[in-house]
Image (cartoon, rainbow, N blue to C red; front, side, top):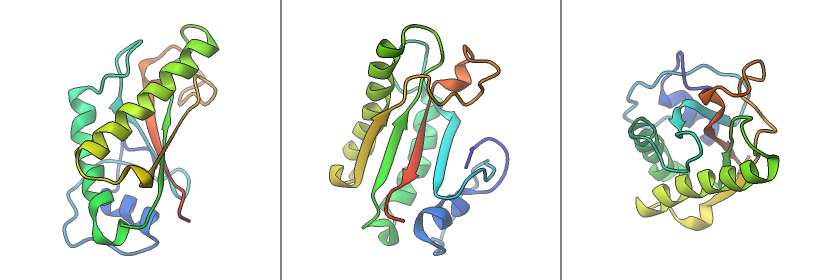
Length: 149
């Protein structure tokens, strides 16, 4: 799911949870691109050369936090995937992408999500969101995958 154009967060919940919908579903923009994967490309973003969460990304993470804390999500394991743009060396960006994933994990853990439910990985610039514009800020993002099936 790329959160930038249509369905609400209930759609995200459905993909993560296999069909169950929470009682309250605040609207969140997005469009489905592949099952069981959520890419917050525009909404969970980072400044250039930084693992600090932007104020916009904190809003998005707050919405996802509601999903992760829902009772039906209690046993789900999520992988947080960090990404960078193409600026700089692969090794440097690999470290930076891992720091970005860890920053997101730290946010969730500090808000009550069990660390054991969250795995992190970094992909440097190997999985650009927009390969036609490898230096664009849209590539500096976090994505999420449901590992629980």
